[in-house]
Image 1 (tube, rainbow, N blue to C red):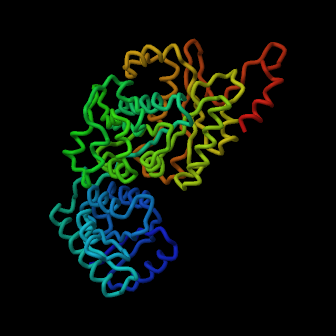
Image 2: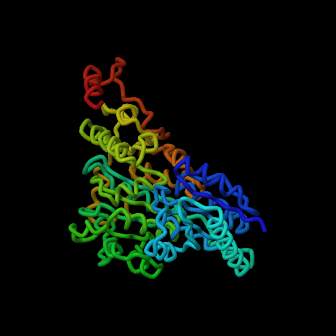
Image 3: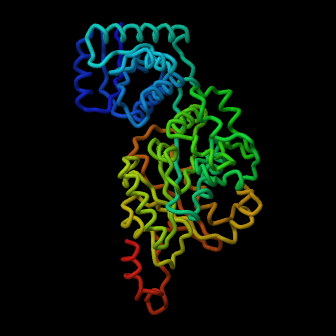
Length: 443
C-alpha cells in the first residue's frame, strides 16, 4: 500500500529537510509541504469534497506551524477529517506534550531532530489507523464529517462609532437570508452590542467557554443562542471585566469549533485590538476594516493597519476597508482612503442613512430594517456575491466585495466608491478650493 503524506511546516529549511527524509521512506508518497494551517485545512477540505479516498492517509504537522498552534490544528483535523492520521513533529517529546497531543487527536509524535526509524514507525502506525477507519466507513465516507469548514469574516472598526456592529449584523443577516448556516460572534468583549441590536437576553457568553479545553458540540450548543432569524449568536459577556478571560487561544478554539458547524462565521472584533480579536483577524478568510470618510477616522484606520502589520497579524494588502456613511459630495472619497491606508477598498461604499437606521436601532430589531434601505441594499449584496464555500488563499480572500448599492428614487445604481462628486452647472465641484488641503490632512 502506498502511503500518501501531506507535510505541514512553515519554515522553508525545515520543509526541505522533512521532504528529503520522507522521500527516503519505503512505500511513501509525500506531497509538497504546505506552509500554514489555513492552507492545510483548505487543501484537505478541497480533497474531501471530491472523495474520501482523495485524502492523504497521514498529515505530518510541524510544531512551528502557524497561524493556528499545532495542537489546535491537530484537534481541528481530527474533528473535520477523522479518516486522516496525524503525526506531530516536535522537539518536546515529554509526557505532558504527549498526553496533550493524544487528547487533541494525534496518532503519534516524532521527535526533532527527526530520525529515519522513528519517523517510519510513526507514519506506518498512523497510516494503518487511517486505513482501518476508512474501511469502517465503507470507503464512501461521511460527507458531513469530511466536508469543508465554514468561512470566517472578521469585522473591525477603525474607531468607535463608525458602524462596525451594524456592518457585522447586516452581513450575517444577508448570508442567512441567502440560505447559509451562519454564526455571529461578538468579540467586542467589554462593550459588545450585538445583543442590543437583535433584542436578545441570554445568560451565556463566550467567556463561559474560556476555561474549557475541549469544546464539545453539546457545550457549544449551550453557549450559542439561536435567534429567531436563524442566526447562531455567541455573545460578549455582560460583565466587561470578564472579557479578560477570553484569550487568543480561546478565540481560536471557539472559532474553530464554530467553523466546523456553520458555513459562515462573522466576528465583530470591535475597535480595541484585544488578543482574542487579533487572533480572529489573523485567521480570517476576509478581514473588513470599517471607517467613515472623515480625517479622524481615516487616520485611525491607517493606525490600525500599521498595528496589524507590526504585530504580523495581517498585511495591508490582505485587508478590505469598508467606507461607511459615504456621500458623493464628501471631500474624502474611497480612492483617497485606499491611498492613505494601503488597503483594498470595497468598491461598494455604504451610504449614510441615519434616519432609516434609527428606528431599527432603537427598537433593537436590526433584522426589521426596511428592504428599501440604501444601507441594507449595499450590505446585502456582498455575501450573495462571495463564494464562501470555495477554498481561497488569504491573498485571494482580500479581493474587494462586488455589487452595487441602489438608492431610492434612482433608476440605475452605480458603485458608490466610483461615483464622482456632484458638480455645479459651471463645472466646478463645491469645496474644490479646499479639497487638496483636506486630502493632505487625511494622508
